[in-house]
Amino acid sequence: MRLTTKSRYGTRLILDLALYGKDTPVPLSDVSKRQNISLKYLEQLIGKLKRDGLINSQRGASGGYLLAKTTEDISVGDIVRCLEGITAITDCSEEDKKLCSVCNRAGDCLSRWVWIEASKAMFDCLDSISINDIINRNRNDIAIKKLYC
Image 1 (cartoon, helix red, strand yellow):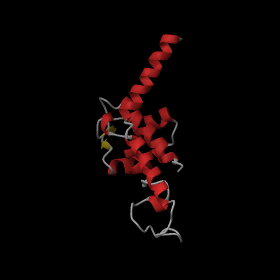
Image 2 (spheres, rainbow, N blue to C red):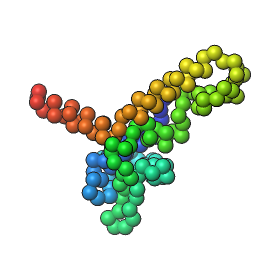
Image 3 (cartoon, one colour):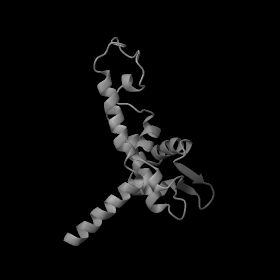
Image 4 (cartoon, helix red, strand yellow):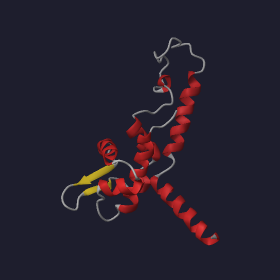
């Protein structure tokens, strides 16, 4: 499975809000400039992220966007599910049913369980990585670089 820019840019958007939106809402135009992502594209992502309860918005002169959950409670898997709209690496492994009815081998496909297990493993991994984990890992990497440079 190849993730689209929606997941990658959505993760960058969430990370930006985590870093810059601790005390005050972040204007989307600021995120656009810092992340070098078009404002129109970010606006498309924001709608989905708001609907799924990952981001809140605040209107007005000092308005913008904030995380709706703590960085510990948002996983990369949450972002991918929200923005990609999928939980599987193949169409036939989207649901764990006996008959998938996707291809001409439905019901007697010997390899389908591989795709189901691979999908589960991928999302187990993505679900185990929180936004907080990413931030902390990068802070540790920066601290180590400072020690050795």
